[in-house]
Amino acid sequence: MVLWISRASIGAALGFLAVCLVCFAAGLRVNTTKSIPVGIYRLTDVPVGKGEYVIFCPPQTALFDEARSRGYIGPGFCPGSHGYMMKQVAGVAGDVVASTDEGIAVNGTLLLASVPKKADSAGRVLPRYTFSGYTLKGPELLLMSDVSGTSFDDRHFGPVNAGQIRGVIKPLVTF
Image (cartoon, rainbow, N blue to C red; front, top):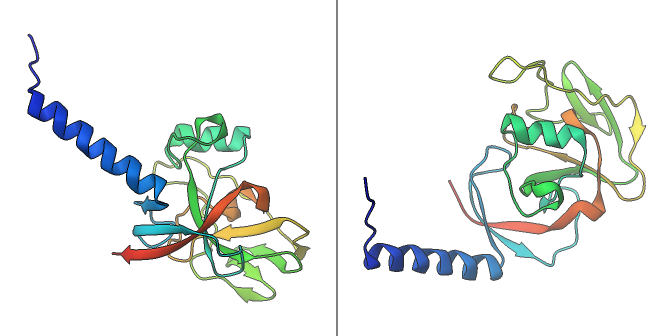
């Protein structure tokens, strides 16, 4: 069987790719996961702070390789060929974090949607990073979902170094 692709189809595909590249170069990012509200975000120069949404490259570790193989994160342009991740900054240096069966607490306040899950939707055991009155130090950040109890976030992989952050993102349109 021979597959014929018209010049118009090739032109349309190349045009779409060009628009995507221009949007990426302009700082637009699309979130299709449940980690933060689904939508279109703009990369900003705003300093990283508590409550901000950030885009970051996951560290190159066996845990993130496994997460990628399970489909928790996609392939992408970060080291290790991992895709970018987007989360909300829930804790910064000096904050005291603790994990319990009820969820993750920051300075004694339980975070919404932070109850640890023992297994993913396929029944595979999920890793659990335990905090017990741990004070975040220097460049450490607690990155969590503020909208999904099933997000792959710091309840699974622990604090992230601020050097992994690629920028603060602000929503333009969310759904």
